[in-house]
Image (cartoon, rainbow, N blue to C red; front, side, top):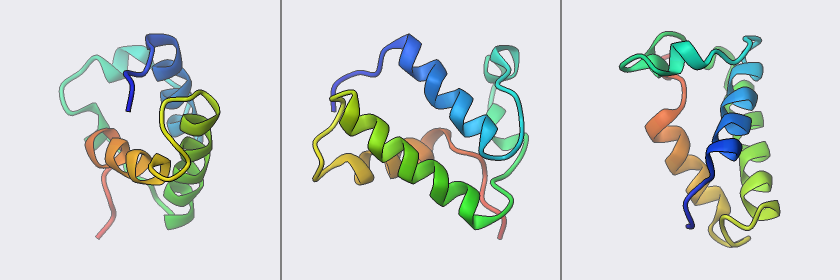
Length: 85
C-alpha cells in the first residue's frame, strides 16, 4: 500500500470520529494512545467505518480492490478505537 497523505489521513480520522458521534480533534490525536480514550460502541460503527475506509483506499488508489479490506482492517487494528469485550 502506498503511503497515505496527511490530508487524506485527516479525512480518515474525521470519518472515524464521526462514526461514533464525535468531532475530529487534532489535539486529541496528538496524545499518546489517543485511540484508547473511547471505543467503537456498537459493532456496526466499526463495520461502517471499515466499509467506508475500504472504498476510500480503492477510490484514492492507496490499495487494490483485492487488498483494500485487509489494509482497512490493518489500519483499524493499529489506530482504530478500542474494542468493547
